[in-house]
Image (tube, rainbow, N blue to C red; front, side, top):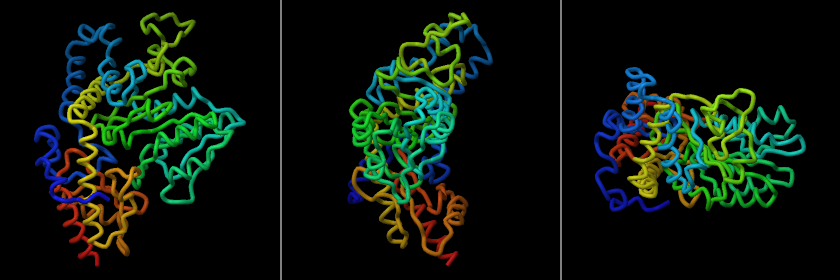
Length: 393
């Protein structure tokens, strides 16, 4: 754990402007791993699109505008992950994109899919459904907490077709070494598919240097965007090799060539953009990513880590058992803890009543500070915990 001295956290009074996240003034919001506070600019971009559509219909949002509606999101996500815009596909949710990819890959009966049993279910449910259809084996890594890089690497064998993981585990914040897992998967002829919903926007991710074959993330966690939007980054070598599991008029190379008797997929990741959606949400996500890029994800990562350090020190002083990584490359700003003899669900309620928002998850109390938090939020959370435990004891 880094030293949480005052100099580390006092580099600025706040990382964000007061109006960027108005809700941060109403509570000590330490629950980004569940749902973010939405960036105000993302809200504006989203609602403006809906208002324009309601007022003007297709006189403004015509075929040309609909064709290009994802362009800003493609560019913003490309910069975020150091890829080309054509490597990015937009969608309505991470689950939707994972499902379409899983059916596109459809590992065969004689292969296996390596997955972790402590992962959030949406990361693996689509793969389980495909495995039931093809007869592919789900090869679970588990029995330890946390599951580590070593555990995942040891499970990959010559029959492995896909390693499907979350970059960061939702419960404890454990972060996998993507480059190590990609190298291990590729050495056995397998692909690495990553759900980055718990890392994108909070942890720097360079997709090409990591070796990841496909990376998917939703909008409404660390990216500070709205519900209803997601992106997938797909390795160029896979873009022409895979047929998406979900197909619609946008999948075609010319979406307004409406001949129904054939489909010629787009030659890049856009083939996974299959249909209409609440397009304003995609515009909101683009605005949120651009905002994070202006601040700098490296800077956000350091800010969040400093807040997490303060939180860990305070939890130690309260006698909590911190189950999240404390140091090293496998840590994030998610901090989860247990309290001997105390029900964490009751603690979460007590915190909420005091205006401190956190989550109880699988026997731990989980805090997840992000760029809109300040050290006062940490102090408020720790003080509330101390008082709540005193009352329960």
